[in-house]
Amino acid sequence: MAERELQDALLLRLQEVDGGADSAEMAASLALDHQLVVGAVKSLQTLDDVIKAEQRSHKHWELTEEGKDILEKGSHEAQVFDAIPPNGIAQSELMKLPSGKVGFSKAMSNKWIRIDKSAEGGPWIYKAMDDIDDSVKTKLLLVQQGKDKTLDDKEKKDLKKRKLLSEVTLKTYWITKGSSFSTKVVKQDTDLTPEMIANGSWQGRKFKSYNFDAQGIIPDCGHLHPLMKVRTEFRQIFLEMGFTEMPTNNFIESSFWNFDSLFQPQQHPARDQHDTFFLSEPATATEFPMDYLERVKKVHSEGGYGSQGYNYDWKIEEAQKNLLRTHTTAVSARMLYKLAQQEVFTPVKYFSIDRVFRNETLDATHLAEFHQIEGVVADYDLTLGDLMGVLQQFFTKLGITKLRYKPAFNPYTEPSMEIFSYHEGLKKWVEVGNSGVFRPEMLLPMGLPEGVCVIAWGLSLERPTMIKYGINNIRELVGHKVNLQMVYDSPVCRLDC
Image 1 (cartoon, rainbow, N blue to C red):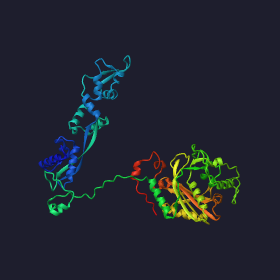
Image 2: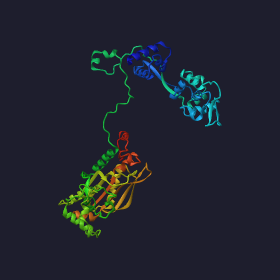
Image 3: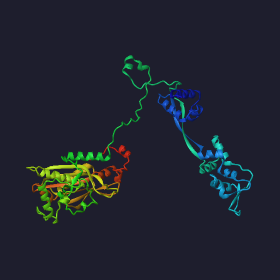
Image 4: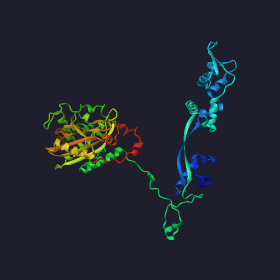
């Protein structure tokens, strides 16, 4: 039956009754599925008060699949009784029946059967009566016939406990005539056209009312990952503060730029394979600014620029090793060296946001591949106070005001500070970054003028994102365990300024 024919049939049936009609009863009288009738009722509800429909709930009992099987074959206990021959049967054989375990217990409880434990070969089962009344099957038949009201609550609960009955809630509609009731469905216009206005035909037409509460259709489009939303906000903050973005397209760096140029000794634990991913192909780099390399070698092995250095045998073979960069500070080193080659020094503010790689053990706050955000300011006579002032302004723009600083050690900064922020989800202070003033042993070999100071800080992109979005496990934000629905549902990141 087509939808229009079904709507007409419902309206005709409604005209014949006094008061109203139930949608389930209508479906039964029309020999249709109830959901088809419900769909037609909802369509009629949109037609300017043609009908009124009130949703109602009805509870009734239905046979489960096992209950239907019992209705056909008899109860478990009846099946056990019928399986016992006149001369009895071994209990072990009886228990092999599909209904043996449940049926034996129930039949014994009803005193339909008896057991002879002294029989040779094990317990022997006999019928204790000639005929039985299978009340379970009788009760299920009453339910199937719609006469379940003849059963008391205890009987129904017992059958439900045996998983033979289930209580089902049926939602139906009580349908009554509306103020504009008609037995014929008149299609309502949805658009007022210029032609209708010109010829005046709009006056005799019925227009469908607008539903201002209806939700619009969500357009198909891509969705930004929360990490990318926060990255965009970070980048905007740096640009607002007058920073220039550094090129970060080299995931592979030599150990020279990643470690040596930063005055990090070649025996440092961070240069071990347990902490750094080294490349096997190509394993080494060959092109370096050799005069700068010699100055770096000297300050490491002999000292200089007011420093005694590390006093060890610096090897170029270690500096040549290629690796996946462990921090974007390697990019900062390249940019500062480039800055030092200018004839006249000019103050700069640089930033970068990109991926770095460390051989970390994965846990709730650590990944082997993550993003590092780095800020660098180079000018004359900068101090630790300047660094703390810039950090305070930077994190305030992020909406992170609960900050703590802790003295730390870095090979390339002195003094150095770790930055902590309070994570409301984890209920603890979480390290979000590191900072410090670059050492003269790093800056002066590059050729930067004396008196030029460089303050810098670096932080993870993932941890501030976890704080902003209330995510407790970093693996729910990045990696194969990410719920893509989270990407779809995440609101636009708004960092409170």
